[in-house]
Image (tube, one colour):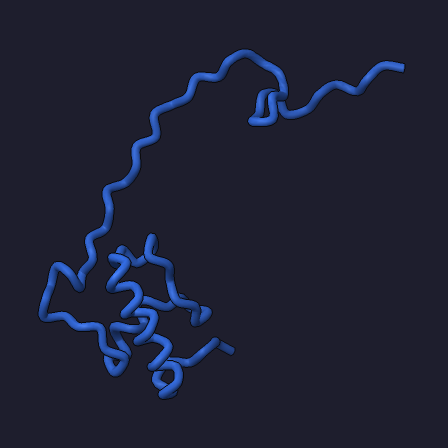
Length: 95
C-alpha cells in the first residue's frame, strides 16, 4: 500500500521543499500616545465622546496596540471606561 501524497507544500512543520527565503518584515511606525503629547487632554470618565473612542462597537475596551496609548495611559483609560460603565454613561454591551 502506498502513502497518499502530501498536501500544502512547504510549511512551518517541515512539510518538504528546500530552504525558504525569509523576507524582510517592515513594522509600521508606532502610534504616539495622544495623552502624553497633549498635556491639556485628560483621561476623564465623564468625557463620554473621548471614552467611546477607546471601546469597540461591541463595548469591549480596545487594546493598547489598537489605541496607540502608552501603558500608563491605557491603565487610566481602562479605569475611566469601567467607571463610565458603572455610572451608566457607556453601555456594557450592545443589543
